[in-house]
Structure formats: structure tokens, C-alpha cells
Image 1 (cartoon, rainbow, N blue to C red):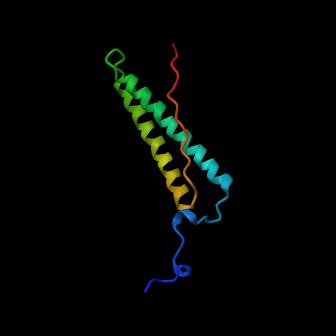
Image 2: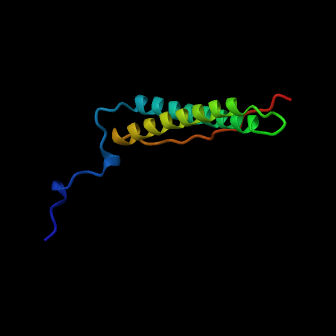
Length: 99
């Protein structure tokens, strides 16, 4: 016999644990910035890996920074999910060229 629906917990996406919508919007904005910073650092690392530039130690610095930024973004996304917020992904545009 199925349980009455009143005894079943709500799905996690419907639970908002004292979580103001402005806070969720700020977290969404911040993890978008972290993902953008990760993308920029990875772009710099790829540039420094080129044979005509050949700055391998600087490349590894930017690879580590890229991983740090993406790790922080993942942590913010995890927080947003735990608190019942909605993830709102925005476009991450590629960095402009300095030509």
C-alpha cells in the first residue's frame, strides 16, 4: 500500500532552507565569475605552452590557478544545491585579443 503523499519529504529542489533569493543570485553571479577566471587562466596557460613562447613554469602556475578557480566554482555550485537554490549558468565569453 503506497504511503500518503503528506509523509513523503519534498524533493531537494523544492526545499529552501532560510535561503533568500538575493543570496542565490549573488552565488550564481560569483560562480560565473569563478568559471570565467578559470577559463582566462587556462587560456593563459595554453598560450605559455606554445613553442615560440616556451615559459613552462609560468604555464604550470596558470594551470594551478585555473584549477583553484574551478574548484571554488564547484564549491559554490554545491552550496547552491544544498541550500535549495537554482543554478543559473550564464554565457562565459572568451577573452578578447590584445592585437
